[in-house]
Length: 66
Image 1 (cartoon, rainbow, N blue to C red):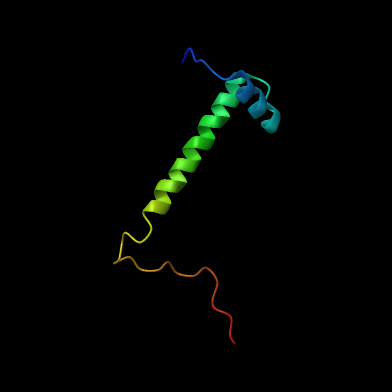
Image 2: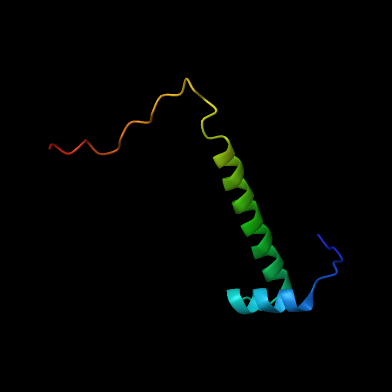
């Protein structure tokens, strides 16, 4: 999809320098992916403690004998 954006040149330059991405489109795509990841994690964390009837997940490894 084509979209016209007004972007801060210094911001795009800095993001490209930090990520190693050269094309502005790549920088924007990576930024959107990072935003989606961050917000998804934030929303998941906000759900913490919302299911009082939930049972703890089984441990993957048996407990170590003491």
